[in-house]
Figure (cartoon, rainbow, N blue to C red):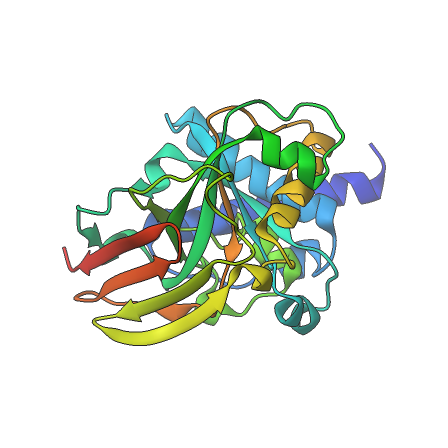
Length: 268
């Protein structure tokens, strides 16, 4: 093994251990860019996968993927030209009628999205929008509770990718619509916390069309050798700005055509 490869392997292991310790102790850590850099995608995704594998070994199951950085403004802010992806595990999904203990999280923020559930595997191309549309069983309103193991959200692109796309938990709504009955681009979203409006947006805010985001994800997941599968939940990206949440908050997002989805946070 050459020196650079050995150094990179050691850095990936150290970065993964740092993030994993933050998750287990509920104590945010320093950024990991000192170990893997701010823009080394291979290293950042290797860190992410190492910690996902650890959670799978502990009993978790992959149930889907999340897409982040779908806003061009946020991409410019972080100096990148593409979204990122994270892995959804079964222990990240919460029911809308069950309170969420804030102690499960470190620095939570929340955003409203359109989630898609796949009807078929996406193991080969083409990964264009028409193919993606045909592969989707239904759409549903969703709340993603994003979180960061890194103190004060002091992140670059490499940090957030390594940290599984700054993932936390997610909640799906009850109303399901096929794409024959629902237009993702035209969808309007309003999110409220304790009744006060905190975020608004629409489907066009997500890479121009949430299906563009899913197409990017399908292609990227295939390139990584971990393609999207039937039954996977896909969180396609925020429709508007995220907002911080705390114990005692009730968050409700309404998405035209998909009804509403609610999350309530408690201290435990």
